[in-house]
Amino acid sequence: MVLAQDNSLHVGKLITSNECVPPSTAVSHVTDRFFNTAHLDAVALVESREPVGLVTRPKLLFTLFRRYGFELYGKRPIITIADTEPLTIHEDERLDVAIDKALERPAENIYDDIIVVDDGGHYRGLLSVKQMVVQQSNALANSVVQKEMASERAKELEKITHIKSQFIANVTHELRSPVNAIIGLAELMRISCEKGYVDQLRDRLSLLMSSATNLRAIITNILDLSKVEAGKMEVICECFDVVAILREVAETTRILIGSKPVDVGVVVHDSPVFIVADPVKVRQILTNLTSNAAKFTDKGKIVLALGVKDGTIKISVKDTGIGIKEDDLNKLFTAFSQLEDAKTKRYEGTGLGLTITKSLLDLLGGSISVSSKFGEGTTFEVYLPRHTRGTESPL
Ligand SMILES: Nc1ncnc2c1ncn2[C@@H]1O[C@H](COP(=O)(O)OP(=O)(O)OP(=O)(O)O)[C@@H](O)[C@H]1O
Ligand SMILES: [Mg+2]
Image (cartoon, rainbow, N blue to C red; front, side, top):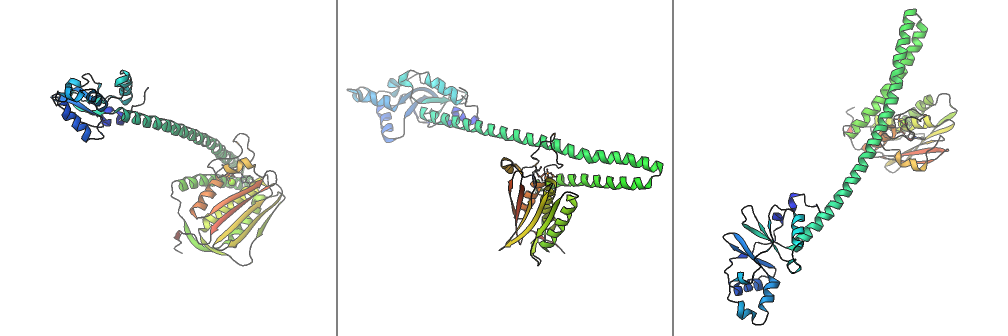
């Protein structure tokens, strides 16, 4: 049995009393002491600081209440009826070792208190068996709880490690594509330059620009997330028309759709709807949602809609794209998680968009919910207070 490896479980720290009398004390005197002190279970006999015996309440009473017991023993020194070889343990002994020693005693002594001594063999006090058992049960319970906590932590760590390695695989893949494109295009541009092909040079330059822009977007996403996680993302509020932002975001979505047969519609009030929030972050939230809708929808429509109720606005982004399986819905806002793995995935992305979106909404005091039918489409709903608390823009 190895339980008490902790300092707090050494017997010296568990001493319950330091009652003692000289061995020459009269039995009647010690009896009075037991009668006057209800909680007293035992008294050590100590001479020149060294323990020489132990008297326990049950044994004293047993002796005295025998026929003529008091008359025979009352005036004698207590040592005559004491146990002169009590279990004596060093104060630095571990609790589990002490318990093992206590249990090795003959049955009639098993509940007797134990005498605790220091390095010099000097009396330190008494330790009750009841106290030892209570302390050991606590240690046992703690060790079970600690083991359970450690295994929970190990599981959590394993999950984080898995998510992080998946993230590194995705990010490396995503970063490599634009970097390779940039290097390849630069080489081709050098050749165009040498040959004096200006038109070809212009085309390649614009492809290079778009690869570099893509690369910047990925790096910005990663930086944004680490900023939010470090609590360094600032909220700068101003009053703006959210309808105008919705229309602009819809326009950008149309560009992302390109030649796919997908309509992009906006359902909003005719009049402007002013809110106080951080416009850069609101735009980023909506762009993340619409860029997903554009990416995962091959035909049908994407609709952005705005609703206003009391002090809250609701913006929904609904698409008729590939949809999300019910089991996958709760993974969406977990950092670095994509529903496809790096090797098999067909769609570009680092799996950070929705995590950033959720963190930005937390910062703005808003929330997000999702509903989806696999194969039919997805709707994200964003709720925002009309007045966000934050630093007001100096403008
Ligand atoms: N509208 C949607 N329809 C279907 N699946 C979606 C939709 N939006 C998100 N998903 C799923 O959720 C995953 C996580 O989305 P998220 O925006 O966080 O990352 P991403 O788009 O893959 O990458 P990033 O946004 O970093 O470029 C996506 O990979 C996709 O599997
Ligand atoms: Mg995305």
